[in-house]
Structures are given as C-alpha cells and as structure tokens.
Image 1 (tube, rainbow, N blue to C red):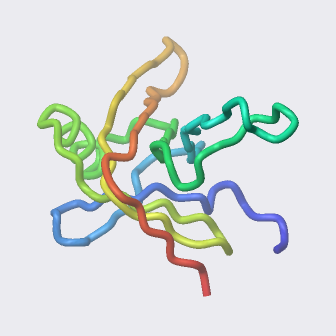
Image 2 (image 1 turned 180 degrees about the vertical axis):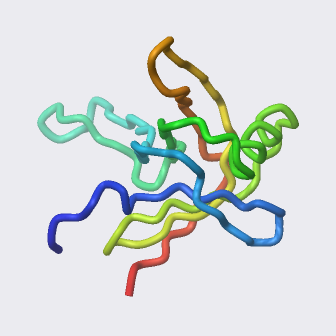
Length: 138
C-alpha cells in the first residue's frame, strides 16, 4: 500500500437515521484508535511464570476524534443535536485503501475555540457504543 493523504481519512455521520452518511464539515485532523482490554489468567501453573491472557475475553472499543474549522453547516448542527439529545447514531470512518469502519458512536465531547485574529475551531470526541463492522476497500 502506498502512502495516503491524511485528508482522505474521513469521519461521516448518519444525518437522518436511515443510512445517509455525510462527511463531518470542517475537519482538518482525524484519528481513530482501537482498544482491547486483556483478561489475565496467569496462575501457579503458567509455564515459566509467563503471563497468560484469556483469548477472546475483555471489552473491545474504539474512539474517534477530530479537529477543524467551525463552519456551522448541517453536520455541525447534527453533531450538536446528537450530543445534547444523547443519541448514538451510526458513524463511518473511511480509511483510504484500507476500508470502512461503521457502527454506533456517542459524542463524548465537543469543544469550540477561537482567537482574536484567527478562525473559530472545534474538536470532537466520540466513543464506540456497540458492535462495529469493517468492510475492506476494493
């Protein structure tokens, strides 16, 4: 796989609850991370005293974050509504030449900032709220 443009890593939100995804406006930086808790089952019989982990156990999760220029367009309004209503709609993360991750996320933080001689910016944080699917790029 060749090097990719960072601008092609997209966060899209379901705008109406029926699978109509739209790219979140104004983002300049995006990040996704996957996490898996471990379950330690090490005991006196563990070979050589090495730690043993229980396969398939523990909680898996993903987190999304993004920052960019505040544009106050339809996706900004939708993100605010999702946050204040406590909704957990589906989001998509498009990773170029890799695939698409899709599933429910909760917006856990929205931050707005601005300076006297600069643009208004925002930061968005999301946490997975259910099972995620992966579809490989073709």
